[in-house]
Image (cartoon, rainbow, N blue to C red; front, side, top):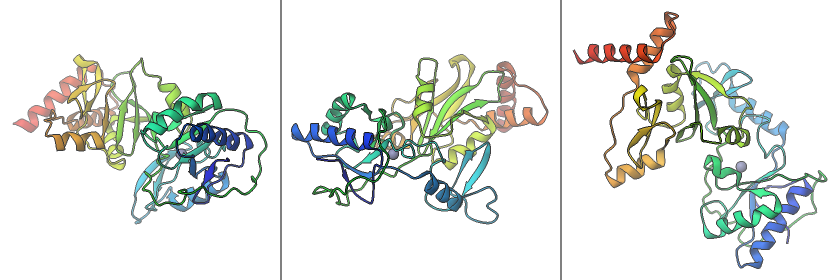
Length: 315
Ligand SMILES: [Zn+2]
């Protein structure tokens, strides 16, 4: 049976279509539901059209819902719905499908699908950026063209709630203190710090974002966190702990390599877990002042400035 499609989704690459169809067949043979894609190919021209509809360089007085870097410039989202950065998505490369339940979450069927997917050159690419519904085929694309019409299987048009696709993970180089930069990923409700042992280049390459790391200063971090629905007091700068640190709301730890998520923070609040109080505002202020004065902050200088600022606010 071919891969099912709903909501007008399609795969025009025969390689992608056949690989997902064969994986779906394997699953059905083991008693799991067939796979149904609710979003497959995205035409690059459509992506660009939607980008220009929803994003602008000069928002004027319009309401701004978010901001994204594209081609080295900051664009403002003036439409309530987000749009992925053009020409970066494996949907545009005709390789990805966003699958419906039960392959859109951490379910037994999806875990089995992940194992069987290997033999079809498919991975659950989205699990690296918390989009468990996003699966990608990595083999030859084959013939590009409209497939023979395929009926949506039973259940394919149910209105099961599906998490919103977020194509807008930012991969950032944080700088402003000394010569070191810190690599972080920022997406809706998620802020992750990468350390040396993390495969961050690989994660960056498969995340559907611009090819390059974006350089941002610590002074821009509060606005970025706010834009992406993250709390502000979730990071710190502590030389003795290794420099840049993130709060993990599930463990209450503040250290390099941590991940903060909005869902984790909610769970911690529900569970009544007491989290350490962080206030990165003095660090931001110190970096801002240093940048304004053309001073390069080193680790000692920032510690001293933060100290002074703290004294000022205390006294
Ligand atoms: Zn997707």
